[in-house]
Image (cartoon, rainbow, N blue to C red; front, top):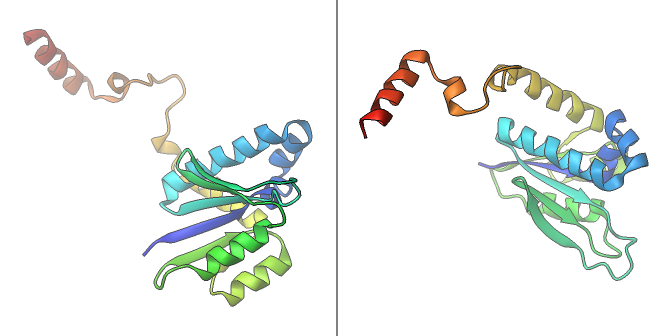
Length: 168
């Protein structure tokens, strides 16, 4: 069973206060920040994250798909909305797989409900991301700690490895 999280990229960018403020200054930076956050979330949750950005107003836009830090990123083609891509993706989910769609677009939420997906509002996704980050905080680096492997090893193990290294 695979668990998917489809994220309506611009909907989330314009809903989370920190990202909304960023979009006013530098949209590319805000998109990159959202992808970084989603990559972290994917890593700690085990959920396959797909972020969809609207590019339907881009003249002659052919759309694109790629992977950024392990997160699948889709830019729609001219005339194709993120909602259309999300609906299509939700309809193709395999039996036994779980699909969650993150958007605060009420019409989109109703459509994905009909396709068997679960919805998550932008606020709920933000809270879930914060909860995962807080839950996994002990595994993140401690302020002032060494970042290399030696900084995370027990003193006895480090001494043993040092003795082995010197014997060669």
